[in-house]
Length: 444
Ligand SMILES: Cc1cc2nc3c(=O)[nH]c(=O)nc-3n(C[C@H](O)[C@H](O)[C@H](O)COP(=O)(O)OP(=O)(O)OC[C@H]3O[C@@H](n4cnc5c(N)ncnc54)[C@H](O)[C@@H]3O)c2cc1C
Image (cartoon, rainbow, N blue to C red; front, side, top):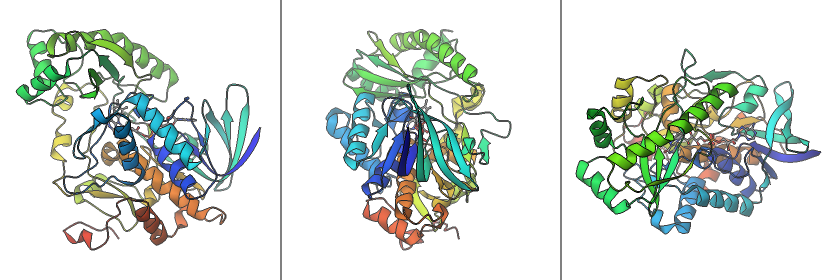
């Protein structure tokens, strides 16, 4: 089968949803290709239990489609509502529905159970992608292509330049998230109040360790959050030294992580008040991958940008989330202290900006990327990989592509003034130069 469209988005994670919805709302014909039977990426197929805060303590800085997703989710599950400065719990079943609805209403043509496996390129222009479905291969020709695969699959297939992990190609540890039901949430919340712990449960881990009853390579729970009454989403357990792009290593990591679940659940039952009668209701479905490839774009965001609170002239998204790097190898001290996460935290009201140039890979005229694979060094990647930020970068590049449909112009050449104007009209928070006077560094 052959199809022709204005824009094709590969990958229906948070970035792909943002890109496809934005592009379709502005009138482009959009096909979204997703290998699972639903959207959401790590937030659904990886069971990641929460969106990071939307506010920097002063303003809601994560707006646009990302904010809409949050509001729609809370409308479906009012008992999930928190304020914008807090983590927003996710119920993965409702999140799938929110993504279905927002995409369908925008008019995006959904192609689920479909994996991109090849491309056709002429010079610096991509012409087609080859999509493997169960019964046939579909060739999709498009004017613009947006890679939201989380692994820069499209850019990799097209021989684009990429970074992978650190200088020794190590990547952050993987986690199989899981959900526990039948939790007495009232007792659990009281316990958190009493210990002063957040979802990291350090007090419970330390107690188990004292009794020599925690013989797994973990220092704390990465995060536990109420998802529905009596149901808690767990980001707990690490698989270290795995290359997620090696299918055999990834398979072994899945098996090891599932094999460990009993131990993790028993720890919760034994040491965390409220969990005594807890039951495992589900894992993943797949192990969560935090990091693989990052593109080399027209601008590479850096750690320096993070610490300088840099806001570039072509800012298209904001973040204030700290540098959050899980170790690649088990390192008790590093995991335990995760100093950079705490030390890098911004003060109220601060943010840095993600430039449009970081979304466009060098060597391509009609390819953009969004999500966790944008052009960034590893440190700042640890900050901008969060799901709501991924929706924002998706919205930015999807909007840019739509503005150019019919012109065949290079994506990098979109009018920044026009793009930012449209993003602001679409309720994204793009700071004006007046707002930047408070000591922020403005990159030229
Ligand atoms: C364990 C863990 C805990 C995390 N905790 C949090 C948290 O608490 N809060 C938070 O905000 N973020 C968290 N993150 C980070 C966040 O989930 C990811 O960085 C984010 O989901 C990345 O979004 P994305 O759209 O770039 O990629 P993904 O979410 O990975 O989505 C990519 C999509 O592309 C599809 N795809 C891939 N290749 C192809 C192909 N060839 N053809 C078709 N489809 C394809 C995939 O099926 C997937 O749906 C966590 C991540 C992990 C792994």
